[in-house]
Image (cartoon, rainbow, N blue to C red; front, side, top):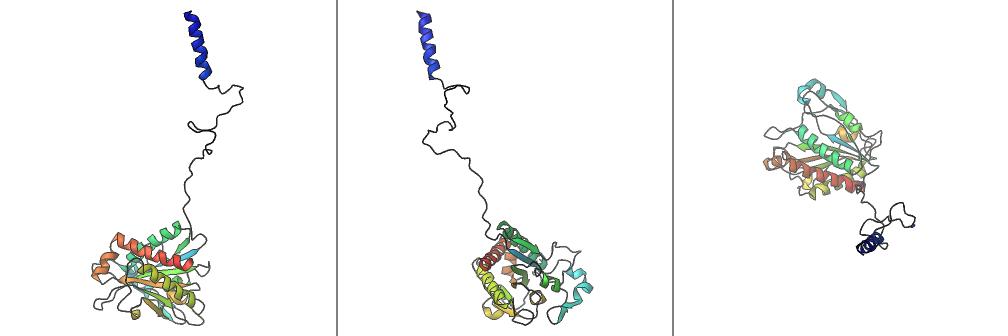
Length: 273
């Protein structure tokens, strides 16, 4: 009697088990445990692709000056073509009252701008690739021609000013003048680029310069080889006055430099949209 009960219990237990993988029942379970036949098929989550709205665009970033320019006076003072006239190859740039050089500021901001533009899909070309005391240049004629042969979609030259005017502060963006045969072809788009860069900086809380360019943050100049020799839309931006104690605090801060970079990238994106 006991054997019979045990046999019945064993049959009941075996009937409740799922068919083995080699069974010929024709049923294949391909849903994960807990899914029913009515559930959508399981698909593993794929990593999201980063949006690249600037894919296919080429941007030249020109970090002003070079840290070692002051060590090479003969090289940086020699005359080079600047668009119908000659100018010295380069200058030393300015600095904060505490000694933080414009060349270093321009380099650090340019690297942040470059990284963000590349994240957005752009191809970025730099006019210099170091910030060192044992290097000088490149000269303004080389900077001016950078991007012409690619051709680039735009060129952004990054600087800071060094005015001793009382209470002088704020940024200004410089576009090339309308000068045939040098810049007549890029005057219009460069002016638009200047407006977009200005908007990008204003949108990050920076103020237009109160000591130059009529106070509206936009200037036009015909004496800059970096602008005159360009065949692509270009601007030079003076991001602030390094002699202003308040602006120097922003420029010497990593957070401040990141904010400048975000403003410049916003301007580039506005122009390329």
